[in-house]
Length: 498
Image 1 (cartoon, rainbow, N blue to C red):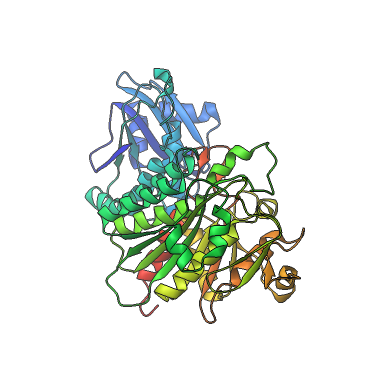
Image 2: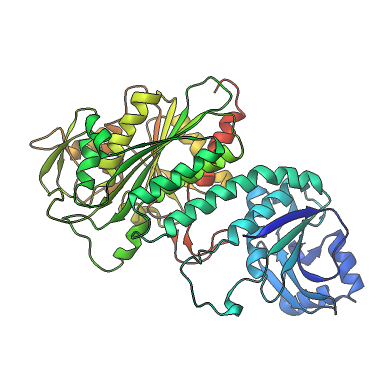
């Protein structure tokens, strides 16, 4: 793991350096001093390379002096428009540009004319971005060449803020811990990360003060969780419902996060096409986000009380698997005609949502799930779908997502969509037809939300995994939702009487 430290010492003169540059190639105070010391090498490189300081663009200058191995110039655009999200992207982009043999590098948050952002916050966010981008999942790589392994072990973030930046970064470091846990879980293959193994990963949060309770199939059967158990019955790997409780300092009802944890989804009897089925190992990304968020929240000792609940199953075809046309009964007594066994996540969430309301009476519930392929068609990979019965909750989630660049786009709910779930033999069916698949899935979940309960559903199927690098996320598992949920809790902490 990348080790990050902070300093307010003068500009380093050896090793590797990442240096911020404003629009029109404008160097900051220390950058200008370094350029003068190097005989104008930075200015010449920018002129010859057409580098203008545009946001997140980089220019690498190799061996600019006998002691400096490389200088990476990174654009920040207009200084007066810099915000926390940009600084995180600058940190991540700078981290990605560092390569070679350097074990230690400096990231300098320079002073620029017009820069209004708190320097300590800028340095802390840049450090967070660097750590998030440095993530690698190498557990199963046994034959890497030395040159393919990252050499960089230490990143020193230099700014005028010094120790203040370090204190600002401390809670962000705990958030990064949660993100890395979630990415690890999503990256694991399904033969390793069974429901039981994932449940044990949640148990590790006990060392942070989280109360973790595991409900097995026998206990869930006593609660009448026929919807969740129906999904699990085709697999030899037993299901679990995991309940994680963080007790804050206040006396308000808790916030509750619920995650879908299908550790592998074949589609069941309604078998998926073979092409690309391998990626159904990440059909548990909603549960990973909840577990990761609970680690972040507990790690930074949040004042809010938060409950995380994840339903963990494997959806497999076998002689014992549920069939299309079967009718199951949920824990709240509603009957469901299972017309498609590949619409299984909503069945898992139905019973988990009931448990959350029955035993915790939360003031708000947010569920996260890789629920529908239709959301990918609608929104691609830039936004997750947001559905909610409460405008205030929806607005606050959107605000939190915008702050950390885990963006949400709200879609409608309505009676006309709800009618598509009508069954001829049961209270409802689990699919609504070929149209509006993401909406009818959300409408299904809403049927398990009690009157007056503020609820939101986040469909993260398009955002849980990415096929190419971005500023703070390397290709692969994104841990979408961890930072969003943590930010949502942090903003709730800042509101009195919320």
